[in-house]
Image 1 (cartoon, helix red, strand yellow):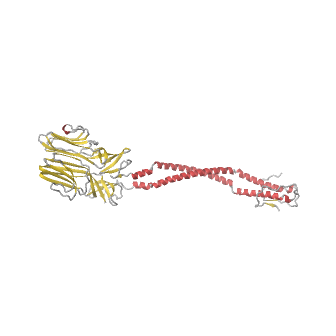
Image 2: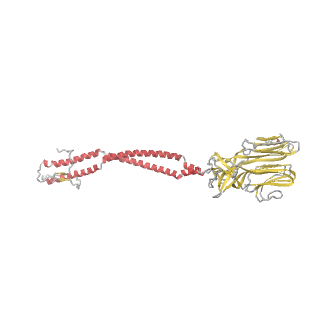
Length: 287
Length: 285
C-alpha cells in the first residue's frame, strides 16, 4: 500500500523510467508515491483554505456590506436633507437680520440726532437749543434723501385769547401766527385736533365775534377788523347767547399763518372776548 | 534524467490508458507520469497563488472592519437623528415667518396705509391727524387702538339770563373719529371755566356722561348723568380746578352745561367753558 506522507515536500520532478529499467514494481512505485504525496499535500492545503470557511464568510461579508451600503445611502440622503435644511437657514441670513432688527436705536435722546435713514416709528426726544424745551417726536418718513418728516407726540397747545371793552361801533382784533420753527425743526403744517372757541360778552348786546383761520402773513384788516384773506371758522349769532363746540375737521394751519380773533360791537358799550386754543399735531421737517 | 514539471503545461482531465498490447517499456509509462506530475504542479501553483493572497487573514481583517463600520454607521445614524431633532426644534420655531413678520410688520403705519389685523400690540398708526397705538385685537377682524394725540372735546356756552331763566347746551361724543369706531373716551383732566357778570345769583352746572336718552329736567338739568361741577348761588366768587377722575365717556353720551339765574336784580350774563383732551379707544374693523 502506498500512503501519503504528510511530511513529504511537493516535488516538481520525478524519476523518469529508462529502457534499462526492468518491469518490476520497485521501478514504478516511487513515481506513484511522489504524485500521491503531491496530491495529498495539495489536499491538505485545500483543507486549510476550506476550513477558513471563506465562501460562507464572504457571503456574510457581502450581505453586511450590502446592508452597510444601504445604511450609508440612507445616511447620505439624510445628511443631504439636513444640509438642504441648513442651506435654507443659511439663506435666511438670520444673523444679519437679527443684528439689523437689534441694531439702530429706536429712541434718540436730547443729545443725539437721528440719521436721516432712521426708520419710521423712530422716537426722538428733541430739545430746543439753549432752552429746556423738549418735545417727544416720532418719525413718519423721509421727504427726500436729506430730509425727514417727524410728528409730535407731546401735545402742542396753541391759541390766543382777546378781550376788549368796546364803545359804539368799534372793531378790534388780535392775531397769532404759527411759528415756522418748533424745537429747532421746520414747521410744515399743524393739524388741529379740535379747535376750542369760547366766545362771550357782557353788557354788549350787539357783540360781533369772529374767528378766522389760516390768515396769511400778508393779510390786512379791513374796516370791520376782518382779515383780507383767511377762513372764517366761527361767528357768533346775533343773539344774547353763544354756544361753541370744539370744531373738528378744520384745515391744517400753515407756518406763519395766523389765528385771528375779531371782537366787534355794533352799538352801546360792553365787554367782548373770545378764547381760541387747539392741540396741534405738527408736521416737522428735519434737514 | 528526471521527469520535470512543466509550468507551461495545461491541466489535463484525461491521460492515456494502458492497453493489453502495450509493451512494458518506459515510453508507455513516462507520458502518464508526466501528465500527472504537470497536473499536480499546476494545482500547486494555483493553490500557492491563493495562499499567497493571505485570504483568511484578510477576511478576518475585513470582517473586523465591517464590524467597525457598522458601529460607525450606527453612531452616524444616531448623530443624524440628534441633528434632525435639533433641526426640528428650529423648524418649530418658525424662524423664517417670525423674522419676516418682525421685518414686515412695521412699527409705524402712515395715513395712507392700513395696518393688518395681525399687526402686534404697540404698532403705531398715524391715522389722519391722530397718532394711535395698537392695544390688541378684539376679534379676528377687529383691532383696538388707543390715541396718543389728544382729541379736543368741549363746549362753550354763554347766555344773558333774566330772572328765573335756565338754559343748557350739550354736545355728544361722536361715534366715529378719524374713520374709526369710537369705543370710549377717557378724559385727561377737564378744564371748567365758569363766569358771570351782573348776575349775582347764578347757577352753573356741568354734567358728564349724560346718556342719549336723558331729557331736560327742572331748571335745565338733565334727567340723568353725573354732576362734575356745580355752583349754586354761593356768592360772587367762582372757582374751578381741573377735574380729574371723571368716568370714561361712551359714544352718544353728552357733556351738558346748564346756566341759570334766580336773581332779583334784572338780568346778567353767565357762562361756562368746558374743555378736555380725550384719550380715545377706537375700533378698526
